[in-house]
Amino acid sequence: MPSAEPAGSAPKTLLIVDDHPILRLGLTALIESESDLAVDAAVGTRAGAFEAISKHQPDLVIVDLALGDEDGLDLVKEIKARHPKVPSLVLSMHDEAVYAERALSAGALGYVAKHELDQTLLCAIRRALAGERYMSEALQRRLAERYVGGRTLETGSPMDALSDRELQVFRLIGQGRTTRQIAGTLARSVKTVESHIEHIKNKLGIVSSAELAQRATRWVETGRAGYPALLGWGFPPPQKFPGPR
Amino acid sequence: MSRKRMPQTAPARRRILIIDDHPLVRRGLKALINAEPDLIVCAEAANPRDGLEAIADARPDLAVVGLSFRDGDGFDLVRAICAVEDGPPVLALTTHDAPLYVRRALAAGASGYVAKREPNETLLAAIRSVLRGETFGARGG
Image 1 (cartoon, rainbow over the protein chains, first blue to last red):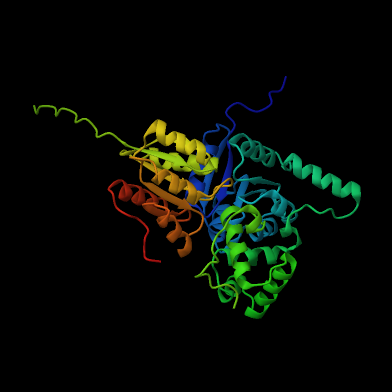
Image 2: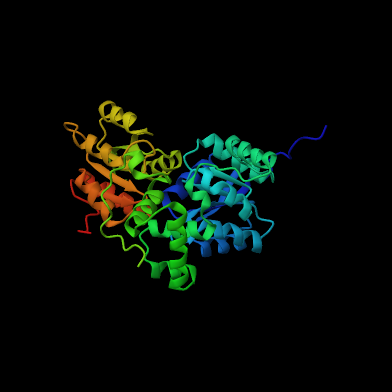
């Protein structure tokens, strides 16, 4: 009778891409505690990721969506384009309602929230290593309903209305970047970024730059897209945030 | 033949409590801190209530508090810990390093502030600095 796996088969190797060193350490410790998994490298930038992929040829890349000024979603798309045989799994502090479908559309095999339990993370990793998609039951239900209904259902998150690029601009604002800095990061003109900002404000029902900066900051800090008043945040308006000019 | 030196008793490790709602962050902090010969994680908690209980039970030398709590305001937790009589100093660990957050963390009573994107060496330096009774991260920003 053939055995399921040859004895002593080499562990599957992973590349971790996350801009927080503590997260890299935590993920590495979790993965390395499993005898069938190993970490090739843990990096914090897009450049580091491609260097590591070329050097190690990992079996799976775990990508954090928020990579400082760089964008994890863009990285997933780029990995898919440049290394189509290397699967990726997305990790994010944000609720999946906003990012999961975008991550899957970008080419990731699955999406896992950072606050999930170790077992959920490991399950997602193993499914992705087996070439299977991983998504939570809630996401599966939502996608199923969408197909059955044949129309776009509202998911309840105001962020759904934003395009990938608008979401990226929103996050950069929340990280305190000026319009000029965002333009530099995206390699676009200031006018283009200002246009994105107007669209964001329209779609989210935001009137002032101060409110935009406040909502964006809260998004970066907590992953929540809701209204400050309803959640009782009570933060004073940010004073030193440059905001869109 | 030289006499063998008697082994010196190693000084007790300073005891650190970790309060953060992300299991991966707690795991990373434990790996980082426990690898140091003079530090050890004595307890961990995933929410403010358990964190305050752990302060009373474990009597740590320092509390590392992640400020991106999903339930409740991390600043409130810092204030609550600082209100504990003979409680430990607090080092705030956060996703955001904007001046506004630094000021609020320190105003809430934190003795130090480190952004999660900082290198691990900075976090260890912050822990040791706060254990020495110093303030860390207040650059007047």
